[in-house]
Amino acid sequence: MKRLILIIILLFSILNNYSYAESSRTWFPQILKPDSKDFLPDYSYAGYKWGEAKLPDLTPTLNVKDYGAIPNDNKDDTIAILTAIAAAKTMPGTVVLRFPKGRFIVTRVLFIKRSNFVLQGSGSGVNGTTMFIPKPLKDMHQPKSLERHKDYLIKNNKRVKGKLYSLFSWMGGVIWTGLHGGKSRYKGRYAIKNGKRGKHQILLASSPSKIKAGDIVEIQWFNKEGKDSSLLRHIIGKDPVKTGVRLYESPAKPLIRQSVTITEVNGKLLIIKEPLLHDLRGRWVPVLKHRLYLKNVGFEHFRIEFPDTKYAGHHIEDGFNAFYLMDLAHSWVKDVKVHNTDAAVLSSRCKNVTIDSIVVTGRTSHYSVHVSNSYGMLTTNFKFESEALHDPSLSTGAKLCVFSNGHIKTGRLDQHCGLNHQNLFDKITVNDGSQIFRHGGAKNWYPVAGLFNTFWNITINKGLKISCKNAPGARLVGLRGVKSAIRLNYSPNAYIEGINQKGIKVPSLYHYQLGKRLK
Image (tube, rainbow, N blue to C red; front, side, top):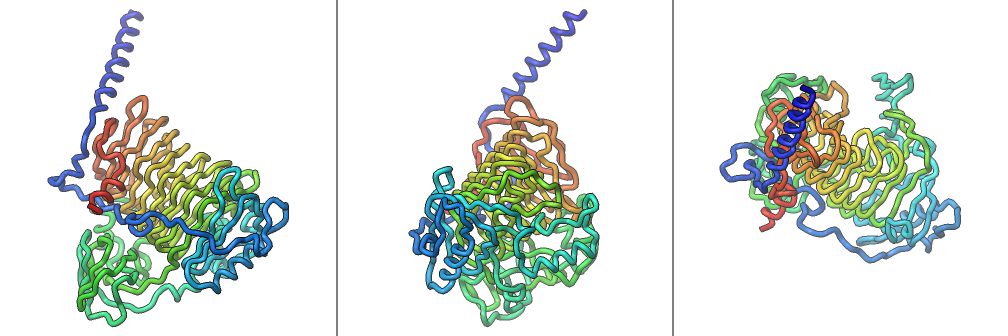
């Protein structure tokens, strides 16, 4: 009898492996076919210059050595570097501040507040340029804007293990970009009459006097109808999901924002470069404002290294943060390695920024790359070799942002609530995927995500029983286990195709859509 049971188990195992191998035929996703009725966002507009141009390869114009920053002398180089950055502010055109090979010590925040500026090292490898940061942000001088955030934490009693949340859990970095003051980001306000999701036209209520081709403008949508508003149904769908109070408690504040580029002005009609994320309906009181950004800012070819310290803990981080990217458009981070960080890249209020060839190593961290309140961010050719609690993360207000062509040691493809939606995880290999859909975010920002977040050609080496709830209308195409089939439970109302099938003919949705558009 025991022998019979063993034979049955062996036959079942053989048949199971055979059926999994049979799924390896090449196939073309039905959702991409012309007759498909399932909506799929066009992700091809993500990245620097909408993916239409390569990242710049620029010649140095300044050298930090000329301002007293000497590599490998074991002395603090901060003042010399800040002096060089200050000198660059007075120079016209594009300024490329060069760091030679060697180790530089930085003990203060490097604030970048101008366009057309590049910090350029001499390589991210062991024989290249290293910025060593011996202390965390909590021990550095901080801008006054963080005091307002501290007041918010105190007012809302944001604590963990009796300690107040860290100011640096999702803010701040040793390299920190941004405009001067909150009000300077906008100018002008125009009422919108109508527009259609996926289209490139905006009809204003009146002819704009100060809008021209090339301007970046921000569209704002408002929820004036409460918890069951038509705008929320448009963004999160009609399926029953948990809805947090933050989505309807502030009708005077924009619920959704999208920055787009004007290509043509014809009276009241504006033609825009990027497709509209949502309809423009009168009941959602859509308005348009000029939006100012820093442009053509780059960070490339260097390594940022923090001391070998233990991770302090979730939301009580010390602030070993490398980059805090704010108010950037058509800018980049290229060929950068970050070691022993709490957060390699934090970003907010950015548009069309490319992060290319970033490598994160060392101890456990909070984030590898974190994207919030941004549009069209592209992170590509990445390697996240250390473990992060959210790895990578699409947080509040992330829209049409893309993670493409990367490898993650411990994958937690974080949808961090706050109406992140229409984003893409694309052509990614995950070593440990046992918590691949583990998400963060507070319940008052529920649901986990809005409609149409897309997971395309995700390969998982370990951890094959995966699930996600309260994330409506996702698109999951080509997810598979390497050695055995994954078991997937994703709800509500997910579009699922090609699970456990090898041989997808479109390995990267981003590059497929970009190639199709550019033809």
